Amino acid sequence: MQALSIGLPALVAGLLILASHVPLGRQVLKRGIVFIDLAIAQLAALGTILATQWHFHDADHDHGALISTLMAVLFSLLGVALVAWINRNLPDWREAFIGLIYVASASLLVLVVAGQPQGGQALTRTLSGDVLWLTWADLVPLAVMAIVIQLLALFRPQSLERFFYIAFAVTITLSVMKAGIYLVFACLIAPALAAQVRGKSVAWAYLVGVVGFVVGLLLAWSFDLPAAATIVLSLILTLTLALVIQVQFQKDKVSA
Image 1 (cartoon, rainbow, N blue to C red):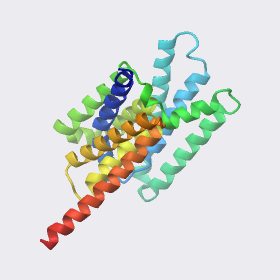
Image 2 (image 1 turned 180 degrees about the vertical axis):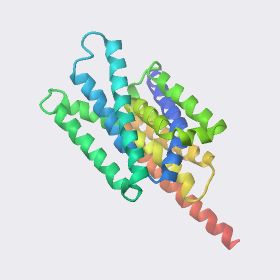
Image 3 (image 1 turned 30 degrees about the vertical axis):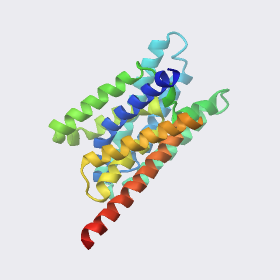
């Protein structure tokens, strides 16, 4: 019963993250801005930590959580605005500049928590999150974004392209606050890459994502391993296996 009460919210969280991240991941690969996720996620984490350092949580927990979320979204929106400008004006160097945004925000985060008693734990949470300890209430923002992104992808894909940066900033921010930077990046890139490399349908991306997440979650629970790191490796291994299967299938098809 305890395994179900802890593991089920984590599983649903993974499915919701994949539901919103696969369409966005396909857009990221299409636009050639792969490292935007790391940069925006790091900025979101910086905004959250700044809100915490400014003691917004001391007076009222719910009010403090709202302020932290708004700060994270604000930092993310500023980041995507900068990335959009770079993409328009310096397209040949966008990945280099996006990488610098990530390094700068990560370095600022280190400086902010330097000397704090729990600074190391705060840094670890931004990277790895604690997906196994999510509650059903934590899944509400993930569910809202999953529904919005899915509706746009299915019925208004042109709107998703037009408002990509805004949708990306908000979705990544909410996901990072629940699951950490590493897991969010893997969920964004690995499934989309599985479909895009060999021209597979979006269903293949969801299959790779779900299998990778579920296997990683089961391994983390069974062997008492860090959940985020285990799921990330599982997603990457599932991607690798999927690409091997695709290559072998094409070889068999050609030889036949």
